Image (cartoon, rainbow, N blue to C red; front, side, top):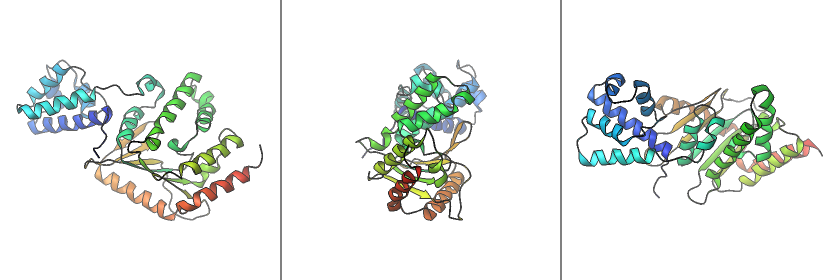
Length: 289
């Protein structure tokens, strides 16, 4: 099956290729951009995949500067450039997305597999709409966000869940949740019971595995939440980290480090077959609302 490739993925792929071409010519970013009608900063963002070159003429001028004369090579790069300009479904909601999230969401859509550790709240792709909305509403007065922001953020998160339920190549999802993330009440008992039931239902999917790391276990727990994305076609894995902004890396040493962290917690967590029983127990402990 051919690997999925969206506009965000294409932008990153194009950016890496343009950086390689520039470095092969021995040019700095400043030297490469000089006289071509766009700034050094813009070219830097293009190379990282955060921006695109909207004009074909700019792309062709850059290829000329890098000495790309082979017809097939130029055609491939120009096709990659054209594909990178496609509109993403989340563009109308970009203002409601933290810095870096729009790029991550594009990569998420193209990933073959995802591994995630979450210690604070239920992992985003497992959340129900009620849980997500309650989460954003709780933060609204402190973060000084609007009701529109809450609704747009909730909509984006619900749309993102399509990657695990789509008919065509759903993503293979493996999540380890700290027990504290499940015990933290968001929105009230009714919303939490609905959330537990939703996770149990998702666990019936062949491509979804959820494990719980009990608080009673004296074992390793990563201090930071993280997500690892794996891709088809020999493309390097990406690690996403959540701080005040969203950042990610495909640096081999970082990928190796987070692989070890995830594997350590996965091996200590309860077996996936025990997750429904654990969640049903938490639901009973909530009592009747």
